[in-house]
Amino acid sequence: MKNLLIITLILISALNISGQSLDNLYITPTDSAAIDVNIDTHAGYGYGYLSHNYSIFTDTIKLTVCYWFISSTEVIVAHDIVNVNLPSGSNNYTLDLKLFNSTSTDTCDYFAFTDSAIMVFSTPVTDSLFLSV
Image 1 (cartoon, rainbow, N blue to C red):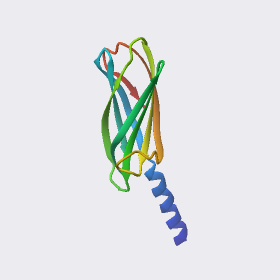
Image 2 (tube, helix red, strand yellow; image 1 turned 180 degrees about the vertical axis):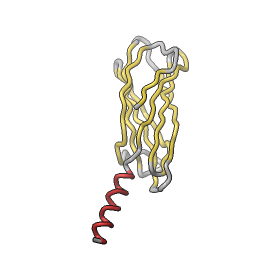
Image 3 (cartoon, one colour; image 1 turned 120 degrees about the horizontal axis):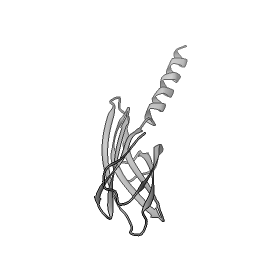
């Protein structure tokens, strides 16, 4: 019975480690050629923003945001902003956001995929666009 309890606690802890969630995603205009992507997340462990990268192919923006994490019992809530420069010519975009955790605090090693969201919008962005996830 003691072994079963220990195994159950280990499984619950393992599930908690990959428990980062995207709460809100919204876009705010900065100027005619750029937007700020605002990302609200929470997790049942310690974590922080590490890095991001994005690519734009025709009308799709692929944005990857990476967070470092540490084993902790406190719940962390974070708000991060990523600036994305938009090319001229297209008016309709699809933002494909993917969140990852990294075991390294220096460079993203994409240890765990934690959440994602897709948002469709048109330019020019004149007001904030909000997606509750």
